[in-house]
Length: 338
Image (cartoon, rainbow, N blue to C red; front, side, top):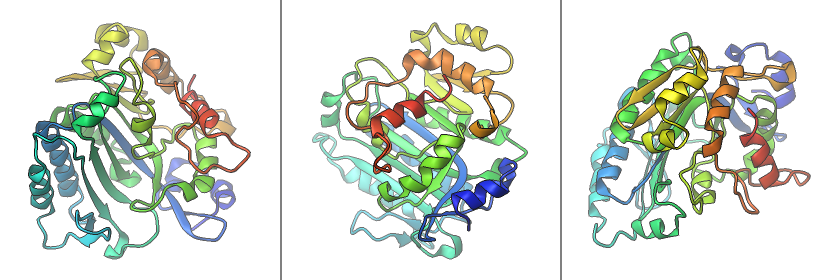
């Protein structure tokens, strides 16, 4: 356990973050560090898309079968143990029970993994959550090729440490299964899941300001805030950034993107889009030490025309300290590689 100041006093490399838990001013555990995956999906009201989301949840559950301990039930609001329970059949049965002709009901599913299988108000090291909005929400979109569904998942740092190709292989496999329209995978903050996010911002914000390679798991906030975008948009970039063919074509196509980025940022194709890798390994990017993350910056420059910035009054950082403005700080963070 450490405060921000204590953690930074001891910080030398990303290895120092593997088993670190950050506490708030009252000593309550609030943050850990890991890999954060964010994926977005269109037409999430279709059962075909929702089946893909369930397949990704199932794959995550198999990947971390020894660590997943709880699921979110559709009756009540208390997590239940997964031990001895076919939670995938339960999730699928619920999805199929939603009348497809009505298309007014959303769909979601979540798995959790707690140390010692005890549900505590602490960072959740294993978590995957999917949300699929109903068809009625598509009428609110400024462009129907933007997100109506999202996935967010955590992966431990030591799961891929020293073998970063595991991250690429995972994203390639999930891209084929899920057919997302855009997304990212790289270092990020691991926070408490199942509770309100706002109170943790005062603890999380200093890390986001200092380490530009960290992603922030905003759950569905970006999807909501970007809903009125009139063109196909993306959220941000990370070590691995995924865009569908439509978005790639808007900025010149996959071949042009490869040419602009060069050999240090390889571009991989999948059935429906491309995955861009920013350099040989994920980086945390210590701003205080002048770490520029040039490969990340190159990817951000190429994809900048797709980035959503038309926030209104609210951004992604709710409940910031009073001297900071949510929208302004959101834009600064999204532009951190510019």
